[in-house]
Length: 384
Image (cartoon, rainbow, N blue to C red):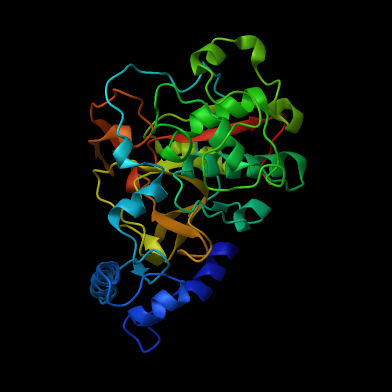
């Protein structure tokens, strides 16, 4: 049975391309308050992008056997360079050379690695307030911070029974990234592991205290320039800050393994995951299967569950591109249980890799969803 959230999304976001309701480019720019003027070179470039994507989408949607549909949204006139900012990576700031930094101090495995026979066939955390609070990162590469804050919101709600917000902006401004893992830090990208490590030590303000601006800025707590290695070596700092709201630790799940992610979602709650999202911008609805086995991981999102529709299994993912994108801000990725959907990430520095880590790495799952998964741990979190 499809989850309630997905049912609602399917009922409101499905767009049949090519029918009489499809708006022309001129109506599109009016609807989205674009400022470029007809007759300018920018107008012509944007129109070309829009109409090319429209033609591609119409061809895709004409296939009766497709699993997902493409639809017009606010991103359809963005350039490839602008779309990259949505994925937590600024290609103009490519790090080069350097050494490796481990993403976390040694954490014990909190999750019980039970048999998959013990987990439900479907689990979607659509009862959480967090699942309806869709954030919009705008043109800041803050997906890693938003995914971390949203995942923490989910687990805090599960732990306490009450919803609360966390400031993604504070994570953006304050998380140190001396080894350039996933980017240069802030709006130029980082990783969920770095965010969790900083929050564990320092705590995290509510969103109302440090609202999202989508820009880099001065850190309001802790230090944004501190050497992360000194924190990782300081066991005395463990949990002083995050203990105030019940967080006791965090864990990176085994890479490219199916069972740990299913078990975490079933038994703990939503999980911050890394994906290849370069083909997501025109997704509208359905179960997305548009990534090949070889994927360049470049975006961080939140897995909020898994399910099945018409015999096709999926992961339900909460994105950070606003509620008007996809299925009310969500996308369903095809889910492969047998573990044979694996390929290679030939450019790992565009994802969670650190400065100098250029060797190709294996990735598994649709859009590499199994490659890097991070889950926080709270005092007595339990399945709802």
